[in-house]
Amino acid sequence: MIRSSYFRLRPECYFVKGVKRSAIYNLFAGDMFSLQPMETDILGRCEKNESVDAIIRSICVPSGRVLDFLQCIEKKKMGVFLEKPYYVEKYRDRNIFRHKSYRRNPPELKIGFISMAYQCTLNCWFCLMRDVSRRWGCFGCNIGPLREGTYLTTQEIVDTISQLHAMGCHTLVFRGGDVFIDIKKASAIIQRARQLGFENIFLVTHGIFNSDECFRLLYENEVHPIFQVFPPVKDIYEKITGVTNPLATILLSLGRLKKMGMPFSINLLSEYSIMREMKEAVEFYKALSPSSLLEDVLVSSYMEMQEDGQWDPVKKALLFDKKFAKVSASSFFDRWQFHPCLYGKISINIFGDVSPCPSLYNDVLGNVREKSLPEIFGEEKYQRYWEMSKEKILPCRSCEFRYACDECRGLEKWATGTLTEIKYCSYDLLEGTWTSMPRNRLNNKLEPER
Ligand code: SF4
Ligand code: SF4
Ligand code: SF4
Image 1 (cartoon, helix red, strand yellow):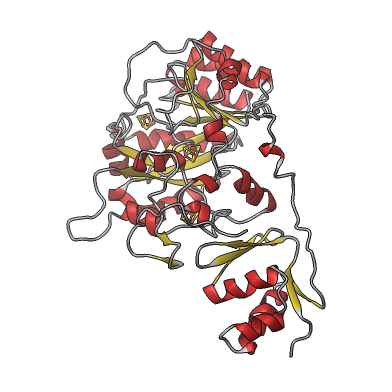
Image 2 (tube, helix red, strand yellow):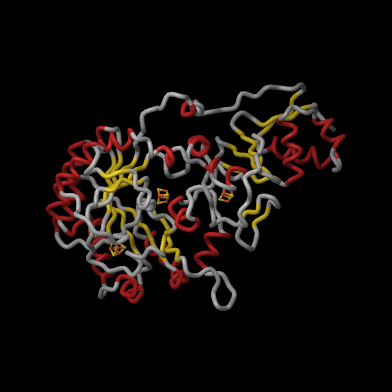
């Protein structure tokens, strides 16, 4: 029996339409539900205030199925039956049109990545290679790509972080190379960053600390180290890093930080040949109680299929095992306005080149030796990156998962050559299915309703 004639989603639940299917985002519960094409049609019409009666009369499914579906949404506390058409004012945690004004808002710098060293005590095989990228490049270390030039001096880096601080940036990530290879330089820069009052200071390291001073520097300046590690197997470590048994030293460093009660994070990096070791490696590092554990993976450009016709496991995972972030009001509206990761970030390499993030190192916006950061921002080249959003990426703009889906633009640009396409996703919007083959490029005529 139809209890009343209309059905609407609650203010905190958003109906996002894709090409064939759709999704409900429940911003308070943090869930996203993927809907079948028929369910998409029913709910889309409800959201346009069409009566349930009219929908049942015009649709080729039994009325019981329509009602079951709507009652299921009601039971999950995402929607209500109503006696008359109703305008639902949707919940928002901000004015999402603020950034669309004609007057430019000043840049809101959030994270500055600062490269402090170009040399390293390890010799990881992938470090300088252009035909190798990674899943999440920003919280790992690497030297490359190889280039000539003079390194920023201690004073130049101090000036740069002072400018970042003056522009409102509150988080710094120091990276290298081996940041501690010149301990005097590291010490001067880190202490200055602390004096300036940055809220968060992270430091990416391979974990080989050559002196007590490294530990003291981290401790006294409340620096949060991020360890880039590999599966904890001696042979694997030696094969990847080209150095005899670095693992023992790294484990000693981790143990010492734990004894000192210092928080740290783990960036566990794997590659094609060691994917099998990852499950155990994750458990091993989790047992050390890091503040966070990120699973990163190297992606090579030279292999899609193996000789036996099977997918390279790294590519397979990137293409077919898409995982969506837990939805929240802030993440949903962040993704509505911006790309999930690029907004508010800036990276400065050891030669002074400024780029939108460490992985987009070829997208140089300027050089701090030639112009100050406010001048570089004044040229507004950064806006191409900060104003990037899923709405500008083909085919994400037409996908119902676009407000829950994370991906690395650095990796995708490396793979596709453009900032606005995606390779590592096998979701077929036209069919509404996850395909067993990677996507063909779609044209941009597909516009979803919102
Ligand atoms: S530890 Fe980092 S910077 Fe050093 S060689 Fe390995 S990837 Fe490169
Ligand atoms: S990458 Fe794009 S097309 Fe693929 S699931 Fe995410 S939003 Fe959809
Ligand atoms: S594109 Fe985003 S996720 Fe990828 S490296 Fe840059 S900031 Fe990190």
